[in-house]
Image (tube, rainbow, N blue to C red):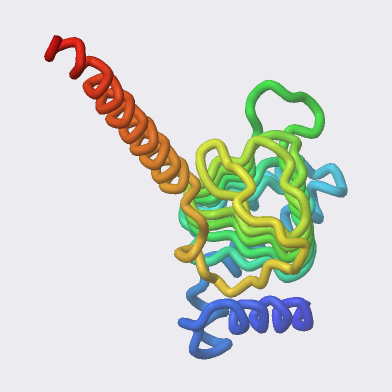
Amino acid sequence: MLKKLREDIAIVKEKDPAARSSLEIFLTYSGLKAVRSYRRANWFYRHKWFTIARIISQRARHKTGIEIHPGAQIGKGLFIDHGMGVVIGETTVIGDNCLLYQGVTLGGTGKDKGKRHPTLGDNVMVGAGAKVLGPIRIGNNVKVAANAVVLKDIPDNCTAVGVPARIARCEGQRVEQDLDQIHMPDLTMEDITMLKRAVKCLRDEMTELEQQSNLSDAPEQKS
């Protein structure tokens, strides 16, 4: 237990520049408390003490604002930063060294049975307010931008943005977990810029056609 606690605290220190000391992290970080409570609840869940497992998870929810179903499968090194409003569903699978920000939902769509929730690979970052819904797979080293809504699989080493989420970048290289949720492609703005260019081209063509029409009409008016 102490070894696992030290590992969890080390992860927080690595990923949160605001963390000052191990004692501060242990006493005040809601994400750490929620993950530790999940591990206890998951032990009871795996041993079919379902009611006790849910009691532990619900108490953690009231204390931290983070709801992790005890049936979820979570790898090592999960860091939930800030954490308020995070929801992780029963059949969710999370790989190693993942990072979730506040308001993230790893949930279901209401249409599926059995495996209803997403599977996240290793080294995945899910930005603030993002929703990942359904039994889909998010690959290794993926970034999900803040407020994105992911409804389809995302391959390894990609960045997904927008509502519904689209792949904005996938270069075949590892996406570094640099905690940067700002400098991501804005696909909506790119679409608007493309439409503006198309409209400008159409206006230029219309102007050219009008000029040609005026020139062809000019001799008829003189005669």
